[in-house]
Image (cartoon, rainbow, N blue to C red; front, side, top):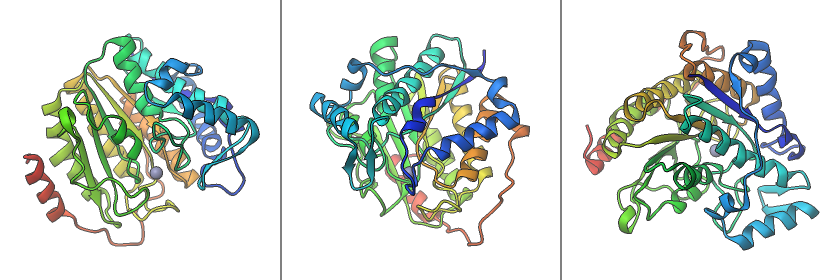
Length: 342
Ligand SMILES: [Zn+2]
């Protein structure tokens, strides 16, 4: 049993000079994986294009057609979200790469894995692209796991600094997918208040942890220990997926959190322990945001080391930020009361 990854090479055709979500992000990650030896030490799963059926489990047919047409001529799906001719294949391989990795884990040929894909996905709604996202990779993969490999319950943890609005909306009334998001709030995209808890049969399977800027490792890890761990245990997932953005890092140019590379190592350890305890280790992460490319390269390598059980090789050469971190114990106390956890 092994740790795998995928990297959609055609991501490079989806790029725009001066845009924070550019091809240089994954290019730097790939260089670092080669120089550390991780690229060859772990199993690389080839990406494939997501099928129309897979996309339509999450997105409206008219929206899929619209994206295809917009990619052909180039332009913007929203003021933040560019597309160009190569974006279509890149987006299909981002979703399809994650699906392939999930399949390898569910069929038992891999223990866990990390999909190194772009464009990211968690802001892409059923009928609207936004926030650098074309298709909602993690939602598409969760649905594929259920429809194609008989998975019952999926836990999606979203630690990208932005709220995963579209993942929340996809599963808002669905009790079979628990969406747990920790994010800066109020902030882009505006959703993610603690009062958003799902609806109908899905009431209680959307969990939002909105935090003010300035929260560091201690605050994040307290959320993992006091909220996520007991909620995950109660939910008993068959598979854990993670929307792994690294834009909560203190050096990220787009947000105001104070998490360190070491904090991300600890967070990865915790979800891995949850997967080991609750679902035979079945854990797949997918890349979302993270806009400081050096931070991103180290964060991805560290994540892979932890997944592969080589924690001692994970490193934080960047250290802590210059700002004091914010104590959010009282806020976490209130959320624990709301969710009846320790
Ligand atoms: Zn983000």
